[in-house]
Length: 103
Image (cartoon, rainbow, N blue to C red; front, top):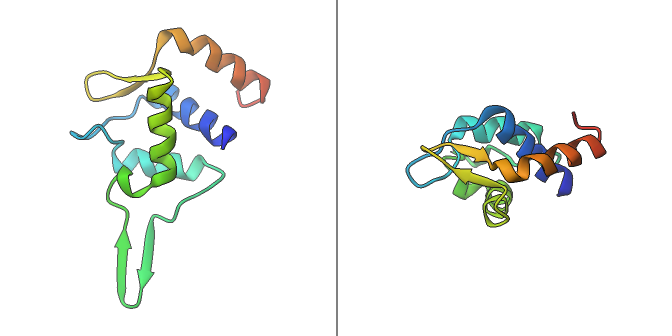
């Protein structure tokens, strides 16, 4: 979980993804984040002849938890329908990424 958390923050820092009206990450960014994570979530599920695709962040509980945690910890903030790293937490993010050789 910890490495996925750092990967999520690194993605937010580099890309500043757009948010929907309900303040969820857009589907394009969900796919990109999901591809970077260790614990990947299926983007579609086939049951019989029907295929059910993920349509929002609410259906991806793991990423939703990470997103909510970063907001609760005041690491990220929403600004003009974009998710951004807060300036005061940027320094600590760089230290952690260097510690785990992610940058």
